[in-house]
Length: 116
Image (cartoon, rainbow, N blue to C red; front, side, top):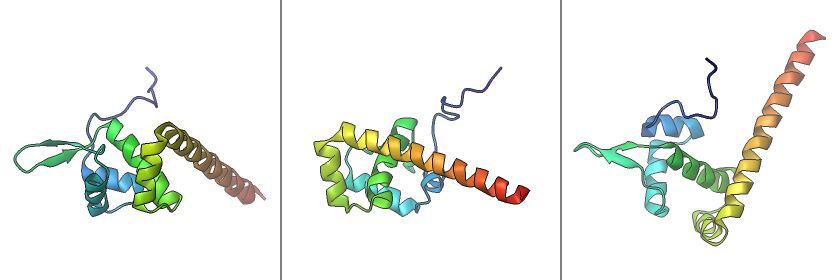
């Protein structure tokens, strides 16, 4: 049976796993939770362990794109998300795809250079 690459592999991700996905500190994610009210991961147990779902990771991907990739300040990122959420989502998707294509092309170039 083939593995569906679009299906999430896990239902919940820890804050450590999510921080590693984006190359962020865990404290950065906790801070973003205070700045962006729509980013609310599920918490469990008396220790309030954060459990991020795919929808939370998509929110973080959008914030990461605006703040870390495009260089927006947090206030500007909030304004963009509040005024044009769909446009910001589409831009983040396109940028993610372009970065993936760039990485693939760089890998191909590396392989070609190796063959010569």
